[in-house]
Length: 356
Image (cartoon, rainbow, N blue to C red; front, top):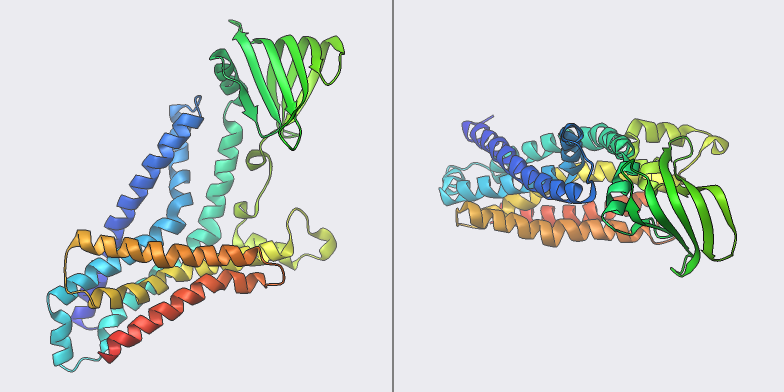
């Protein structure tokens, strides 16, 4: 490998680390604000456990964008310092000065593939487990004591006039809504006990001295009401399974396949690979754009990278997501459609630079 290639490769790695850490910090700050607002009972210990989980869930976005930022910054600097013109005048083939970017993109694609195949599913499962570990009854008591009407999903709402010193809600009102959002039933009780049934994934309320004020006229001394927990806490999703686990699911016979649909699993496997390949494609797109730009300014380079991500990367993701919803289109085609668009753009730009 030429001295120029080694130096550029080292610079690419260094710039990607700086950009990646910066992007991750910004995303973690935004996530932290959201989590703190929604989780009033999140302890400091639980928050410390949650931070690396939140970080892992963002890596599929942070790594490709940091690769693009690094490519644009590094090759803009190389072009501004006339190193490319010097190599061209020395008879060095364009493939030689594009090689470091391609190697860097391929290495980062392998790193991202390991992350989306194994690390992110494990982080998603930990995030689900952490959500279940949050003391939902205590959280509900705190909100009820503040006079809030708390909605559990779209079909249930709970409110209370006060909460006793023992933590029991008083003058509790539970409202049940139909699928159109119309009030269907309402129960009022003097006091209530709150708990979580982890076996059935339900929120349980023991009502005392209750009466039905809408949807009937019955009453009684005690009644148990069970409300399903939100699906993101109660259910196992495709995102919670590693790629080897998804492939093992596909290898099962039809009668042993539960919870998921085959097209969704096939699409998820291919979409993870397509996501990893994005790093290499960003290298192919970023290098020619940077080499056609004579201005070396990190702010300007970051702006270029942001615009490339905004007008190429995210539209390509939307293309894949839209095709997933179309009946009759293979999930494999849908998964690779956005990546294919990026590949055509990147190879076209690289060909243009080589011909110059």
